[in-house]
Length: 405
Image (cartoon, rainbow, N blue to C red; front, side, top):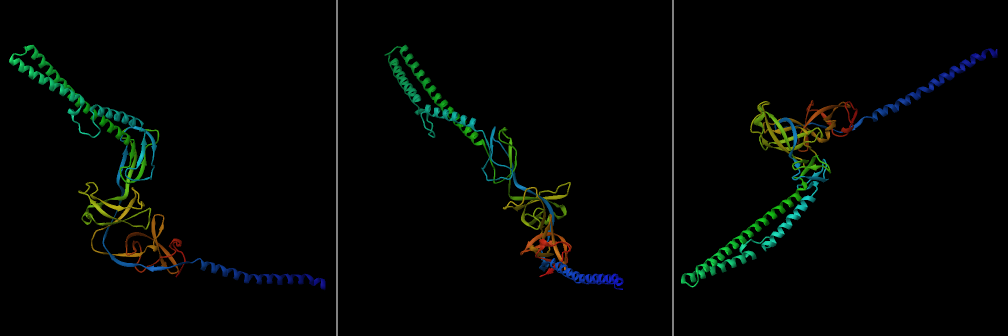
């Protein structure tokens, strides 16, 4: 009896153990669900929100253009020579007069030394010092020739008087007169020699000046303050006169070249304010002023070329950047949406904001405009009643769950 009921007892015992095990698992599952809910709540991002400010602002004309350097110079070698050293490279900042390329200066230096020696020789022959006034009559050769001429002329005069009184024969007078003419010729020759020596001095001084210039030209220098945009030569190359060795751009002020449609030409004038943005710095606004307005409309495009100057003291802007611009036209004011700069984030080259929608946010791509009283104008699919995140913007994404502060 006892043996027969043992399988039943064992089965009952196993069933009870299985039920107990199943009953023990239920509380464990409930406990694991609780931390998951808490983790989901902790994943919500705390963010502070603000309302859009609506304000009347001056009317603007939206356009686009390209930034170019205020000045661009293809710096050329003023004299031929072998390049000894290149002192700059692409991006090097330079001041006016800074050396860019050094050419071999040995030959012009030797020519300068030879010309200086010729100048010194000519000065010694003339008997004057550098800078003194040239007076031929003060030269020893000229003074001696003049004294000899004066003596011969005086002697010829006395002989003529004796001839007239019968004191000397005609032959004696003829000889005296010949001596006087010869002395005068020698004086003229001495005077001409002095003039030639002076001309030789001037020529030697000119050659010395040219040699000094050649020595100076062996150093190719920056024509103005700016930066090196291109380097076009290397050490060891021969640079003929006129060879471009580097391109230097003046970028402290950049020119924004814009073409305005003919219909809007009357809205733009010199002195109008310009705000620009570039893809490299999303959300950053640069200020400038219209400085030049074209004299005629382009026949093919029916547009008027204008130029605005954009200060670039920090060098952030580069020639060649494409820029979007807003020109103050001075027309009737229009409504604008203004937000704190902190509300604007970036995604690649685009600007974006996050609108509160319940306990989540919705991303909106916007266009950044002018800056007024610490607020930035934005344009996009927004409503004046929308609330935008101003904190944790860099951590938010479209659909992020938020906890409003």
